[in-house]
Amino acid sequence: MNGKYLLDTNVIINLLKIEKAKRKFIDKNPLFFLSIITEIELLSYHYLSYEDEQKIKKLLKKTQIINIDTLIKEETIRIRKQHNLKLPDAIICATAFTQSLCLVTDDKDLLKFSWIKSIPLKDLLL
Image (cartoon, rainbow, N blue to C red; front, side, top):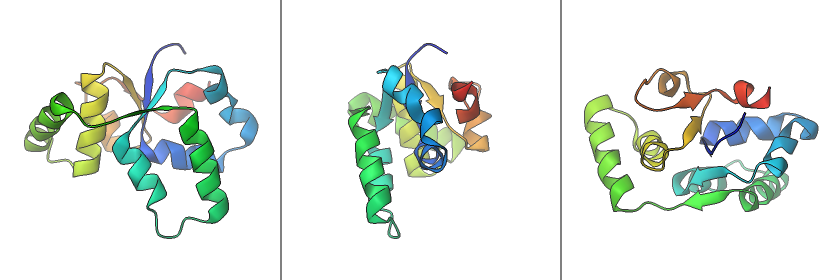
């Protein structure tokens, strides 16, 4: 699959659980992005082991982090009002939407939205 992808927090967690060979697509595709909220969620997890933290930091170096700007902030507000999403999910969706990125998520609720291009992780691994 070709394109630019925003990886949801749950996708990064799931990537850590699968074998290294299946994660190689990240090395081959430089067009992976993360919302700053995903970085915060991942690194602030209370029960994160040192080993997993190192894996996450290594993975973060292979992606581009997108900070929250005015456009993302305004879209987040609109999304929360219309869809009643939790703030982190709304920020991630707003980031994908405003940056014209395909959201890679295993969150079934987010995959249902027709206004945002999204795919599950398994489709990216094919």
